[in-house]
Image 1 (tube, rainbow, N blue to C red):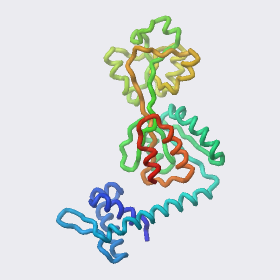
Image 2 (cartoon, rainbow, N blue to C red):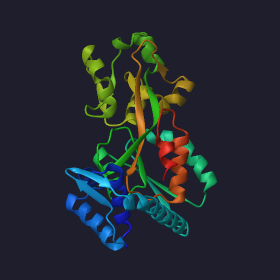
Image 3 (cartoon, one colour):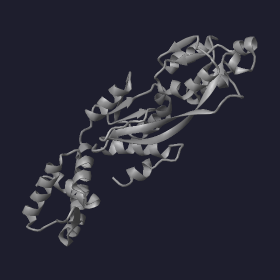
Image 4 (cartoon, one colour):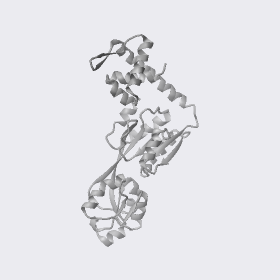
Amino acid sequence: MDLRLFKTFLSVAKTENITQSAEEMNFSQPTVTTQIKALEEHFGVLLFERVGKKLYITDAGKCLIGYAEKLLGTHRDAQTALQEFNQDKTLQIGLGTAVAAHFLSPILQEFQKKMPHVAISIEHCFNLPITVKGILENSFDFAVVHDEIMHHKILQFDVSVQKLLWVAHPSLIDQYGHEVWRHPFIALKQGSVYRKIYHSLLQEKNIRPVLEYSDSEAIRQAALNGLGVGILPEILIRDSLNEGTLVAFEQVPNLEIVFSVIFHKEKLFTRTTYELLTMVAERANCQSPFLDYLQTI
């Protein structure tokens, strides 16, 4: 029997609504109805009763819930166990932002010490659609992004909140002083997530950036060269601040950006992928249900 029938059954049992389950499963309503009927015909019992417009689960349906959960759980365990025989498995990770590499680096170092036989391939995506496409086509096991993803097939969990600091080269401070609004500004191009965070502030102060770039690393280099003030994630410029090659302004608005993990909602994680995601969840520096979610699958 197709195990997907049990997955559909559990969805309908939870929602008691064919339409809602169809949306959740990304099926048509007739498909969900047909799958439920197939189960009923196989077992020879009625699993749901409809009274008017309301759907009610029968006693037989309630009895089947536990068995369906065990069947699906055993199937997941079997797939996970058998994946471990593939020693050539490579974890595929998509990065929707280059800054995410700085967040992942210490986690990946620890992971590779724990599982040195697992190869990791990281792909920097030029834009959000490429990242989403990689998730939907199973090119990535998961991805790290700083955009909010609105797609019914993708799950998203916040894992890190990073401060955005206003920084400049010390020579620029000597030239323009400690009042940040007197300085020339370097910014990301309009439309980027970072730019959206501070764009209204620049408009309010009637500031037009002297330079615009498409990535944060280019802004960091421009700031290091004394070309203007950059607004950058703390994780990206920590070393420069410690070395004194960049100075952070103090009397400025507090800004932050959130990094999150995304993956396909029907993705079956291997033990190695699960292990890495658990390490990411355990190191989250923000309120997140991610670890609780991982412990339920």
